[in-house]
Length: 317
Image: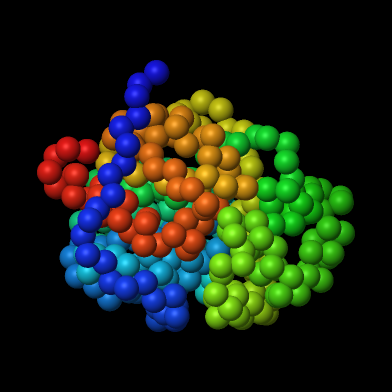
């Protein structure tokens, strides 16, 4: 078994962390028949594209994109069915379909981008980088949703979500889930995704509640969440060349793998295997951190990302 080379942290100056930063303004972008909502962070340099996880949105990258704005221009996408991106009729919400949408968006840049993915967005980004290496300059994976088949329903914000995708019983479960208030959904998400929920600022909690209120008014949001959950679970059971474990060795881009030590959704135990399978992968495990390190430790994540970029420039990655 190969020895993992530790990921370096940059000593470059970063802007002061301002957690009062509002979500960056967004606009609808025409992408392969979709109107994809993208939040743009003004900055300098090449483009960075951020892909959120299951149940997330472009707002999950507000603080990290602010930390990196002196080095890249940031573009945080709402995947179809999430945030403010309405899915087109017939969209099936599989990981490969989400990846095709991301690929179509990356093609609009005309040059490779720095690609970021968290959780389900990490799995999608692996598919993108493996199938279209010409589009990806570097890859950053934050707790990517690689296959993790431990039979623990408490890894979901609500354990009933696993039942919601089943035939017969699913309809009743979906009706029960629909009764959850935006406050309930926000509380569940924070308790599951953050190592220390008490450190989440009140205004970030209010932003999440407002976002969940908006989702409650969207006729397509619940279906998108349920079917994307099924799509992710199906990908974990996919054997052969389409397995995520088989795709990782095909990623050519320099790749930083970040994992929270206290990740309750996808075990940090998957980190070493993930990084070793990547031809140019390195791993950084963050203490006192959960599933969304880019939200919980944005400054540290930014230093790790800059450390990768600096090492790539020196040809030492």
